[in-house]
Amino acid sequence: MTENLVLEMLRTIRADLSSVRETLREHSLRFSELNSAVAGLRRDGAGDAEVTAHLNVRVDRLRDEVDRIKRRLEIVD
Image (cartoon, rainbow, N blue to C red; front, side):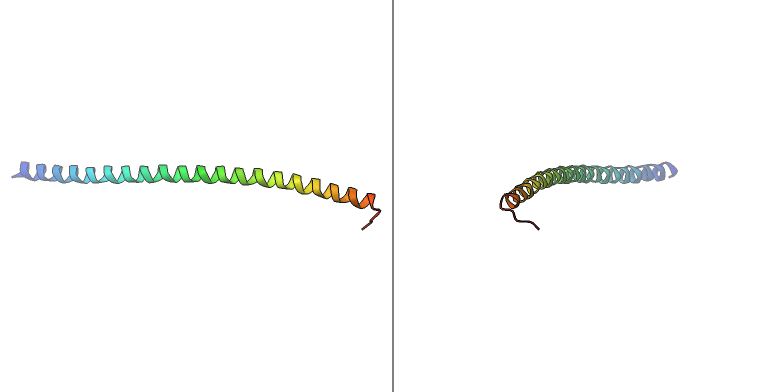
C-alpha cells in the first residue's frame, strides 16, 4: 500500500514538473520576444536621434544663410 502511495505521489510530482517545464518554455519565449522588441525600440531611438541631428544641422545652415542674406540686404534685427 505504501509503495503504491509513493508511486502515485511520484507520478503527481512528475506531472507537475512537466507543467512547470512547459510554463518555463513559454516564459523563455516571451522573454526572448521582449528582448527583441526592446532592441528594435533602441534601434528606432538611435535612428530618430540621427535624423534629429541631421535636421539640426540643416536648420543651422538655413539660419546662417538667412543671416547672410540679411547682411547682404542690410536688414538688421
